Length: 340
Image (cartoon, rainbow, N blue to C red; front, side, top):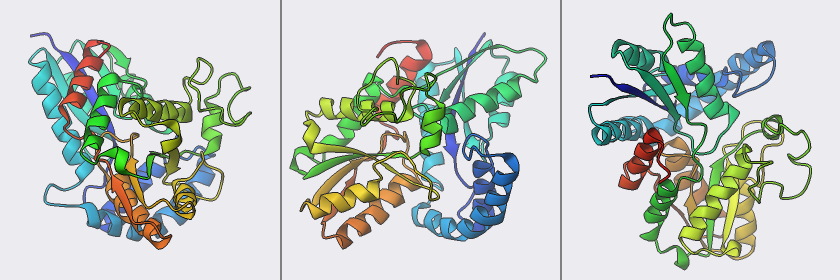
């Protein structure tokens, strides 16, 4: 039977929470020219000489906090998503899962698709909002590898899906059990990026960070902007839950280094809300489609502790999409080109 190949790609995870494996993961991740987009020599000195040696032991401790009997939550849920998608698509499709960094590698997943004699390959980076450091990196790596094949099949890419209707509904469904209307404020905390990377994606050179709140309205001019897509995702989820604009905040976490990253930072928003007397916060992380270190530890543990120290009471994480049926149907729709 002639089959269509589907390649799902998530970010990646260490093979174990031990320091050597975390070191390998961080080295591959941070040496990506799209992640730390500075000259190669400077990047190597920074990553290999400073960041990886010092961060690996600390990061390993964090991974040990979220590692369970299923191993890495990110890999565990990603595997479930791939299996459920294969089940929904049937024998006419061949679904493979890869991680951009570490295992299973993009190279091994592509080799499996090639061995399966697929007629085409559709690549879906599992990052709802487009960023050069995530979606762009996956696309570049796939093109680099497939470009070396003697016979290159039809290969297509899903650039982003930040406004996918079923994805929005799935996030909203996950929040409803917490009764969002009972919380003092709703936070949409997205993974951060350096401001310079936003500016690089402004093809006009005349829009990004040129005026206040330039990302708050989604237009043809900023439709490829990561921050603008984040704000639009938040607006759509809030609308699905009937949350008024004044009741929610968009912010960005996981900052690395001292240079300006896209703002406001989640930590600053926590301080501001605590100063205003807010006690209970409900937090979405819509840049992730599977729970991982950034959701299970950074939000559920670190931000909870930080907010309590500031006088707040509760930071409640809304679970990621994981194995939500609407999310799996959203993937089916992406594969089949359906607007659902």
